[in-house]
Amino acid sequence: MALDPHAIAVRERFARILECIDRFTWRHDLRCEEIGSPQRIAPYSYAIEVTLGPTNAELGSGRLVLLHDPAGVDAWQGTHRLVSLVRADTDLEMATDPLLGEVGWSWFTDALDDHDAGYTAPAGTVTVVSSRFFGDMNSEPDRAEVEIRTSWTPLVEEPGDIERHLKGWQQLICQVAGLPPLPEGITPLGFRNGGSSLQQLNNGSRHD
Image 1: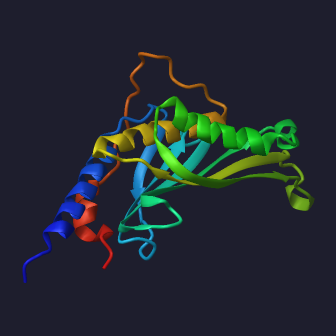
Image 2 (image 1 turned 30 degrees about the vertical axis):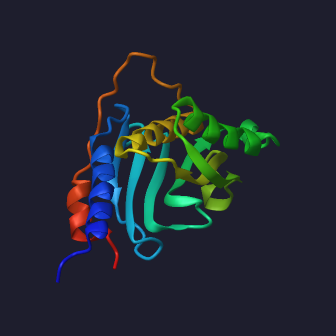
Image 3 (image 1 turned 90 degrees about the vertical axis):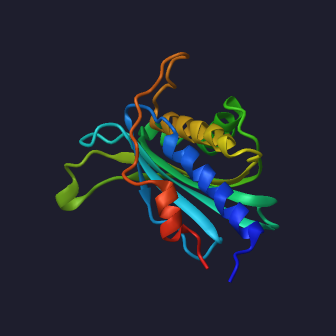
């Protein structure tokens, strides 16, 4: 049975986007690996997880999922969707700032705008959790964590456009963790993930 030429073209285009993600150069202090992606939300999906900082002193972490439905989704206002979770510890004084929610959201939108990453239909939440320990754990210091969950529709005219969104997302992770962006002209040393996105696509990121 002959394959639908349109379906082949869609699959190949998504594979090219994944190749761009594979080739992306992350900051030297950010480790990236491919993780399992949702199976039922969209016909095509891919996911990564990143950790910022050394293994014994993690500064922040994040997960990013790319969804693609060639038929389009009304709520997305497009055929692609990026879904993100970013979290990092913060100081207790910042955790009590009533404007932290608005500030956290501006970190997200500014990060995309700074890298000219076109998008539409953004949505998300900013959550701050503070913890005080008691009993056998009362020796632990008080701590607070900020968590930013976002989703947006990337305007991907060409497969390489996805890199603008990766740059913006990387900036968001660093900002939440309190790290400054790399100076202009400094090229980060990249951590490549352990497997090829194209291979992952061939092995099941297309969900029938």
